[in-house]
Image (cartoon, rainbow over all chains, first blue to last red; front, side, top):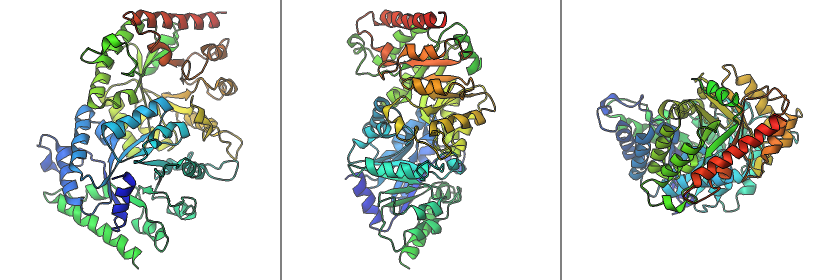
Length: 270
Length: 270
C-alpha cells in the first residue's frame, strides 16, 4: 500500500489524529522504569491502545537519537509494533545537498522503511528531490512551523509581496510531479492556515502544535468544515502521551484519543 | 579544550582544510571490502594519514545513518580514532522546535560528544537555541549553501532589500551571545562571499563545496589574503577521500592534503 493510500484509508474513516511518539524517558510512568527498555514498553502500550483510532504515527527522531544506539534499537522495535496498514512518518526534518540527501533518503526509506518523512526546505529543490524519487512515499516539507520563532524567517516578506512560507508552498506545488509531496503547517497559525487554504491545493497536510504548543484543535478543524479538503493530519504528542502516569495510562490515552476524534466528528458533521 | 580553542589551534598553524568524512561504502578501495567493517577501516587509514595536516574533521551523518545501527557503530568507532585536540564537526543539519532541538543537541553533544554541529536556520531562533546553550561548542548555521538550488529560497530578495541568506547572517550575529556561533557559506558562491565579508563579522566559517561541487580552492583562499579573517575551514570530502583506490590510498590522500595546504600557504604568504 502506498503512503497516500494509507493516509486515505484513515481520513476516509474520519480519522485525522496523528499520534506523535515523542517518547521522553523522563516523562514515562514510573512503573515502567524497571523494565529492560522503558521507552519501548511505553510505546508498546501507547500503540496497543491507539492503533484502532489513530490516523497515523509520527516518530520524532530526536527523542530516539538522544539515547544513542539503544534509542535507534527502540525506534526499530517501535516500528515493528505498528500495523502495516497505518501511515508512519519519520519526523526527522532532513535536508542537505543532493548526494547527502540521497543517503538520508536511503536511511529513512530503505533502511527503516518509513512511509513518510518531514523535510527542511531551506536548501531548495535538489535538497529534497532524492526523497521525491521514492514515488510511493509521502514527503512533508516544512512551510510555516508551529514554534514562536517561525517569525524570524518564515514570515519575512519577500520583495514580490509574498511571505517566505508562501513561496515555499508555491515551490512544493511545483515539485509535486509524483503526487508525493505534503506540507507541514503549524496548528498554532490557524489564521495563516485560513488565509492560505487555496494555495495549499489539497496537498496532504501535517499540522503539529495542538496541545502543549498552544494550538487549538477546534480552531483547526473548523477550517476544514464544509470545504472539500480531507487529506490532513493533526499531530498530537504531549497532549496524548502524558495525560496519565498510572498503571492504566494506556486506557487513559485511548480515551483521550477517542475524545479528540469525537470532537473532530462533531465539528465536521455539524 | 573548547571547540573554538581547537579551531584556533589549527588556524594559527595555517591549517584550514577540514577533512569531510563522507565515507561511501560504494567508493572505498576494493581491498578493504573483505574486512569486518570496511567503512571504519577506510576512516582509520584516512585519519592516520591526515591528522597532522587537517584543521578539522567533519562527519556527514547521512553516510552513517544510511547504514543503520552498523553505521552508527562506525561513527562511534571513527570518533575514537580522532585525536582529542582536533575539532570534530557533526554535519547533521539539525533543527526543530525547542523541546525537540534540545534532544538533538543531547544526541550530538552529550551522547557522541562532538565539538561542533551544522544547523538549519529555517525555523528560527528557538530551533537553534538549545544548541547555543552549550557554550564551549561551535554551532555552524547554514546561510548560503553550496548546492545549485540555493537559488530557490536562500537567494530570494526580501522586501527590505537584503537576500534571505543575508538576513540569516544578521540573525546569527544577534544570536552569538556566547561566541559559539559559526556560519556555513558554500565555496561555490565566492562572489557572494566576497560581497559579504564585512557582514560575517569574523565569525568562524565553514566553507564546503570545493572540488566535486565545483568550488575553487584558490578563489576562496584569495578572499582571505591580506584581510584580518582567520577562523575559516574549507571542507573537502570527495576531493580527498577518493583520489586513489590502490593499497597506498592513504599516502595519496596525505599527499593531496599537503598539496592543498601548500597552495593555501603560497596564497596567504604571497
